[in-house]
Structure formats: structure tokens, C-alpha cells
Image (cartoon, rainbow, N blue to C red):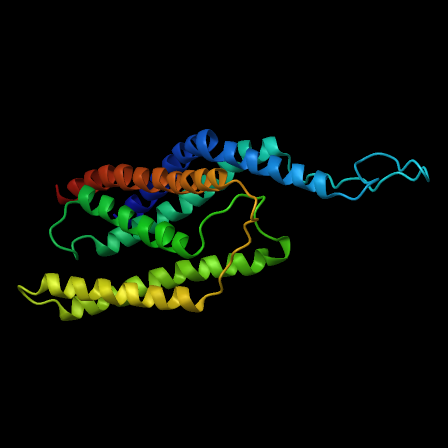
Length: 254
């Protein structure tokens, strides 16, 4: 049964990735194009005289050629975007199915579809929303190239912290839960989670590399579109996998 759930989870992740790709093409990618246009216009404005892509008149020496793109922009928002999201969706969908198989029946009397949807919503909150409070998504034109490694490590560290704090809070909640005291145990677990996450966000390095003249509306629209893309992915996984898992479980009982 676990094998049946696994491949259905991967299929749900791929379906979610395809829908998320359509959403990203319609809402996120236009913001990225605007951000790239902003970066290029400022690069041309800040370039020293004689380096605008033409020969220098007083010497005849050609300007340094611009670096060619390793991957074209059309490929990035076309085949590249689909490939990246499909691989990501298949991976997280498979992990989601394994977590579902472990947790189903251990958290009350929720049915397969309700549990899958709750698990997807919880994952979206822990992996997307909470890390975005400390490290919100930024378009390509924002951020320094030399800090990419630091920003990437800090972001994934925030995800690990959020998931780790959730595990600790869940274990404490489970240990303290008693008949008639479930609400108190849940509330205490939530307080512990928020405390651990708050401490981690305080200790992790701050990243603030947004140029002062960067359009605020563009930044806001990009961040909303990025979260929306993840929301489409996880909502699809929760709904599709829940439906398929229900059929698998009903078949196993019969």
C-alpha cells in the first residue's frame, strides 16, 4: 500500500507542478521580466563612458564584449521552469505521501482527504509562509552575487528550523495531551513552536539587499506571485493525493 501511495504522491506533485507552472507563467514571470528590465536599465545608466557596447572613439579599441547568457530567458521561463517545477513536485509529492502513510490514523479520526488537505496546508505554512517572514522571495535583480551562497544557506536553514520546531512542538503536545486537555496541550505546542522559530529568526543573519529605488509595487507583486505559485502546488497535492489515497485505502479494506 505504501508503494501505491508513493507513486500517487509523485503523480500529484507532478500535476501540482504543471498547474503551478501555468500560474507562474501568468503572474510571476512577468514580474521577473520587469525586474530584469530594471536591472539592465540601471546597469546601462551606471556604466562608465565608452562602455555602452560600442568602440571607444578616441582609441578605436572595442569595448569589452558582454557576457553571453548560458541559458536564454525564453528557455528559463519555458522548458527550464517546467523541468524544475516537475522535478521539485515529484520529489515533494513522494515525501508527502510517505509522511501521509506514517501519520494517517495517528491524528484523530480524520478521513484520507481531510488529513491530506490538512497535511498540505500545514506543510505550506511550515515550508513556505514561515521562512518567508524572515527571508521573503526577491526577484533576480535584487541581491548581490557574492551573497548568493549565504542567502541560500540561511533560507534552507530557516526551513529546517521551522520543520524541527514543529516536530518538537508536536512531541511535547503528544506527551502532554490528556482526555479533556487536548486544547491546552495544542496551545502549549503552538507557543513552543512560535518561540523556537522566533529565536531562530533572531539568531539567523538578516538579509536586506533591496535597492532603495527598487519599485515597491513590483517587489510586492513578485512576492505575492511566488507564494501563490507554491499555494497552487500544495493545494493540488493535498486535493489530488487525498482523492487517490482514499481510493487506495478503501480498496485495501475491501
